[in-house]
Image 1 (cartoon, rainbow, N blue to C red):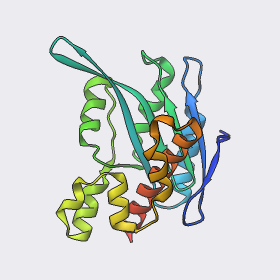
Image 2: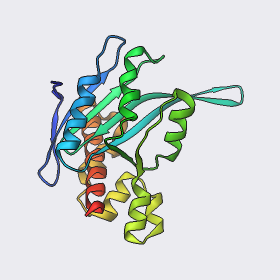
Image 3: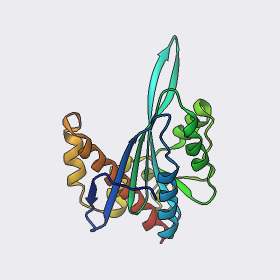
Image 4: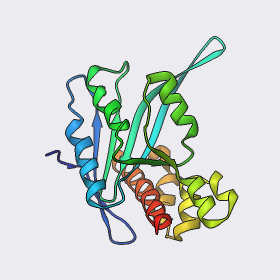
Amino acid sequence: MANFDGPGFAMVDGYWIQTKAIDVEPSTDISPYLSRLLEDCVWNGNRAIVFDLYWDVKSINTKSEWRLSSVKFSTKNLCLFLRLPNPFTDNLKDLYRFFASKFVTFVGVQIEEDLVLLKENHGIVIRSSLEIGKLAAKARGTPVVEFLGTRELAHKILWYDMSRLDSIQSKWDEAGGNDRLEAAAIEGWLIYNVYDQLQQ
């Protein structure tokens, strides 16, 4: 079984998020970690995996070339951060299959452009995805909520204390690896909880 042996972080509601950051090399087997995320989201009942994508953009003449550089996945208890190789290698077929899973819903904030970029640049199709802002706008009857970022959306729905996330983000350039991993864990946990709250 994959071991999420990175630092663990306590959230404001007392939940503990265990993390793992992986620099994916051609020989790296990411499938046990992806399986562990699936197990956790099924075990917790809502079958949701929060995701966030990070891109490298290179301008060639008048055209921009987009390449997926890293991915963050979060469940109720886990946060996985994958830094991806350039170019992609065969071991990333597991990532393609993971995104194509019909057993879970991939939940994100402002993801419509990401979904298009994934398909156009890497041939990756997410079978079941949910834009959490749209769900929140519909559930709360407040259209403007659809356009909020992670922090603002979570604050509007959950009213949690955001001071730790604010502290990390205010000094982002000086933040170390563990601080950035904690910020990633907090953001994933916030969106997971927004989704959970809206499902009730």
